[in-house]
Length: 196
Image (cartoon, rainbow, N blue to C red; front, top):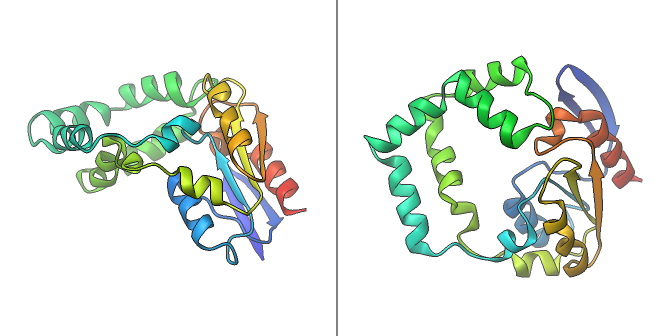
């Protein structure tokens, strides 16, 4: 199968056997349940192993979600968070090793709307961590690569993936957290390496 990847005006064709790009908990669950369809798994800047294997208590999830969906406080928070200046501030602080690009800000602003909020509310409330994914991670039979950005302070907290999972390799490339965007060539090289 051929996969065309497009990151920041970089186009390349990468021959792959199987490849998925999705949130880490969902990717691990899909790969574990479908080993004949998903031959390899790459997790770029996933949550720490502890975060993937420790469930957030239901009451905390409910409190977080209700706040984010609140018509007054949640709406005000989102209106503030969707402004270009705040997007830039948090992107520079948590997502990019260098300053975020104007293209990133443009795309993020375009995607900001009341209709786009529900999945963001669910994600930020912690619903992806509603349970432990330890069983899925330990039962994976596919080769898995965990990729971290060199500037990411959570690199050391991801080492457990390599120790707890059967066929897991750890890689670090330039970048911080949004690796396919800030270092597409590095990610593509790792995808090629996985496909060999």
